[in-house]
Image (cartoon, rainbow over all chains, first blue to last red; front, side, top):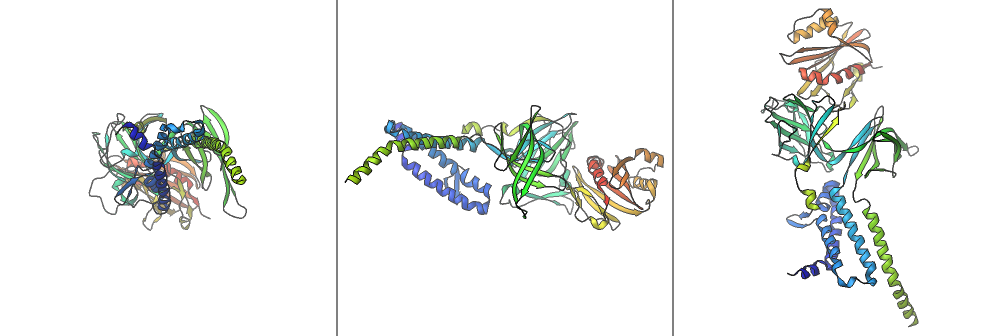
Amino acid sequence: MRIKDIINFLKQPKIFVFAMIWMMMLVVLGTLAQKDMGLYAAQNRYFSAWITWFWFVPMPGGRLTLIIIFINLSFFFFKKSIWKIKKLGIVILHLGGILLLVGGGLTAMFSSEGNMVIEEGAKSNHVEDYHYMELALINTSAVDFDEFTVFDQPLLIRNQILTHENLNFEIEILNYLENCEPTKRTSPPVIQYKGMLKNFMLKELKPEKEDNWNRPGIIYKISNSGTSADGMYGIFLGQPVSQTVSIKEKDFTIILRRKRTYLPFSIELLDFKKILHPGTEIPKSYSSDIILIENGVARKILIQMNEPLRHKGYTFFQSSFIEGPDSETSVFAVVKNYGRLFPYISSIIMCVGLLFHLSQKLPDLFRKSREKIAA
Amino acid sequence: MVFLHSCGQDNHIRTYQLAKTKALGSAPRVEAPDNKSTGFIWEKPESWIPSSGSSMRLASFDVPYSDGIGDLSVIQLGGTGGGFEANVNRWRRQLNLEPQSLSEIEKEMIENKGGLGLYNVIEIINEELGSAFLCAILPAGNQTLFVKLSANPKGVREIETDFISFCSSLIISI
């Protein structure tokens, strides 16, 4: 097949039409499915996937479909007939569409979202991911700092060996439980477990519909430390007492937690305010008085509903709150979206394209209309 | 761009250093919901699980630490409950340790202030046996409360801060 044939095939408007119809079907299926399987699972299965399986039939997932649309729109520019002043509006319109897809691609691949939870009077400089976990091994031996070696969720799979030059031992993941419940042992275990597993066991549960309701857990083995710390341990998300081990004069704390992203600035919550609708317990608005601290410089800012804080590429939305007996805690949804501006720019470009095209077509339409009336 | 984003395992391992924070591993505190019938109110860490103790006990908790679970008991006795010397030496005998004189005991006691006023805390450790107690004696009007944590030496050291916070939070329920 010649290159010309490939180009001719890829620029066919038919591909765009079928891909758009399939994308619309995916949107409908995904929307219906999220009722039963939860939002995150539905997003992963229908929209973020390259391939979506319908029983045993593989079909293009949302990601692949959008790439097909992107390629098809890009090859549109190989058409010689469009490079005319008359078609300039259409060209601009396609350019806007391509830019929109590029923005979507950047968002899908590089963006992150999570939340920052701060109690009144407290400070935070990290965002916790909604879905991804990390296993943090913290060397607490130094007097004034802690050394973190953090393994991200893709490595937390069965039989994976975790090693790093910072660690004088190995960790083997024996099992990763997506959702579990720590339950107290009623009889001594057959295996000589260490740490929390001596008295508790991690009972595997069916994953919840909403991903962030799950409590993941790990059964792991410490080996090659050359000390009595070698053995099988367990850990779960939100474990109240962290596992600590001492290996060759180094003290380590091991924590399974939501993936953290540290920010180049910190936020202190001064006051959280909640206004209720009169005579009800239904909140009308929330707002947080915060201090943004960066390079030793503090700046007072108000974050409220529909008025997020945008700083260094991060957007902080007032998302929720937790009421405590003595103080309140504010929850911010934090989004870093590299493709944030693309929808605005591409929408403007597409509007310009449509207006240009319309302005070229209007005289013809008026002429035809006049001819029709005259006839 | 897709390949650059997806290749390499090393990008799943991150290392960094942070200044020490006291909050590492600390647990939120909650007031026990059913403690008013005991005549006392307290705040305990969320990780402490109420357990069934003997009828002598006002309250019992399973207190998890990194190597296991400690047992915490709260006992109420009339008057001074036998005094410091008798009680501390009873605990020492339970750990196969020799009794001490009152002056020796007083040297090891640490005074704290809480909702019930001034109280004393003492750590009794037998490293050879691998067992330890952390005990608090709290005068409460014409009675005395004895709070005892039983764990291994490492557990006692880990739980000490929460133990003192718990003892300090104790107040008489009105």
